[in-house]
Image (cartoon, rainbow, N blue to C red; front, side, top):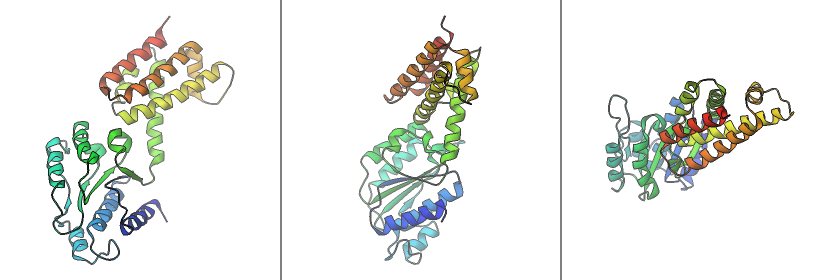
Length: 280
């Protein structure tokens, strides 16, 4: 059984055990599968049959036809097709109204990592903190690490298998940051740190940067390995500078947890990296 089938089976069990959380996030690299799982779950949430989703009750039929009055999807706005703050406020207002035909009112938000800017996520956080009764929020995302950590802490995440792709992105960005630290000019580092404006991604990348720096530190004291990036770190930086960069990265991760402005934090980090790597 593949991950897609396993997730649908898992949701079927949760639906029929009546233990559905108030908010779930379906994460995965395949947009079609994310949407299909979200639609399966929304149909099961409004189903009035003995086994959810039964596929034959009036609620299932309406859900399949995208005409159920208790399944709501916010409209995308503007040229960039985003879920703006006004749409979120409308959603919050509508969530306080009891369902029309089903026992549960369902709100489905597709691709929130791409369509929901940080300001809208912050507005949406309000309803996740105090969810109305008989309401289910279903979110989908290709990569949850591009979302606010405060949102992720209030939803239950179900992942289709895309962990390797996320790890590859984090690793690639971490290598880019390290290469920027080692570069002769500041431009490369500036461009690399500017990509870390998402709080969750920022912390994951810096954790990986610390791993590379520790590998470089080990290399510099004679513990050899086959990592080219560790060799480059040991060759271009003194042990004191490597230790300073590790301490700075750890400090930056703590700063990210304090709800600071991410653009300012990235700018500060770039300057501090250069200060340590260039200091005489």
